[in-house]
Length: 209
Image (cartoon, rainbow, N blue to C red; front, top):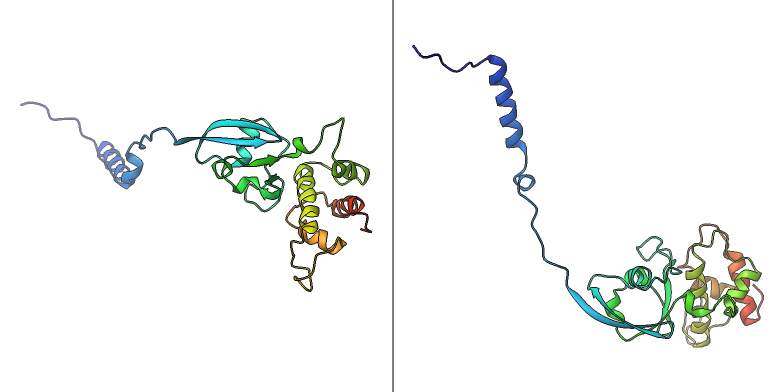
């Protein structure tokens, strides 16, 4: 008489456990991941610090990553990457923006100024000189964004753009300490150099911080 398969109680239990585990795995986990095609690419021309650059970019690329990764302008910093700290502030068409929240393709043809475009080691921008004089930085990580924002803030006030601290928004804003601090509130300094930054800005416009 032929001998049957050698089935043991241990083998039956092991087989049952393996089957149960396999059944418990979601179908999605058992399915190989979908293979997607190449990302959508588009050309964009940016005038950065006076120099035109034409690039072919993934449509999802932020202006911040374009400046840092593609143009190697690493003065603009990546901080929170959520538009909350201001470390990535640059000046676009005369207005300050958080470059981490803006896609590069949105700025096709725009003129962009980064910290590298404000001044050079041999010829600093007055705001850069003021920051050095008043020690408006400690670790320095947020400083490029602070300086770009400070330059734009003074232009905003000169242009008469109102703010939340004005009692009457129909009147022209003044270069007061409160006015400048309010406008700079979106730029965070973990080292707490705020009073020194305010002094640097006040010196530029000739008022008391």
